[in-house]
Length: 180
Image 1 (cartoon, rainbow, N blue to C red):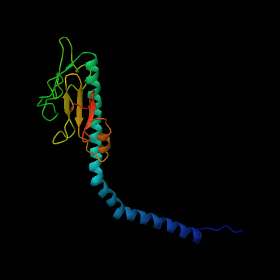
Image 2 (cartoon, one colour):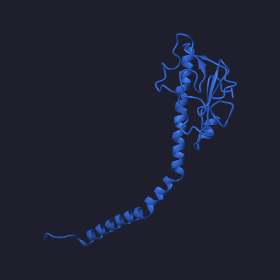
Image 3 (cartoon, rainbow, N blue to C red):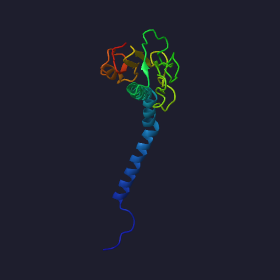
Image 4 (tube, helix red, strand yellow):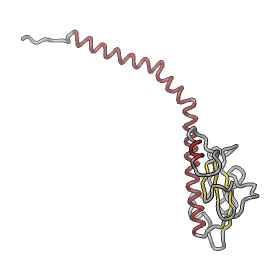
């Protein structure tokens, strides 16, 4: 048999078809695909992603603060005070001080350090938005405490209803979820 040199017509047609498909894909992404993708991410999805992130921050803040308060109570580093008449027991009205005068109220017994020994931030957290309905609230009857926040993402309604508290519009944690 003689050696054939060059490409067969079938191979050339297949190569052209592949190149044509690649051009179609690139053209589609350039004119439609990317703009559709960007349009989706720039609208509702991005705002809900931010809300989910804020809700994650809120839950993390509450886990940290609840654990710290429980440990401080157990170790007798703080004594809870009744906040029934408190005017600044919210993250938007109270200070971020850790000495019991911030938006989380308690007293520190003589010779004790309060919650500062467990709290690396050196100040109380505040809600990521910290205005309007998106604030942290603290309640205590002098023996138990409750922390409340409003979650904002699409999936937050379930989380607020399933937290075992008495308010389905708030995310509640603490030693009693019926103080407010």
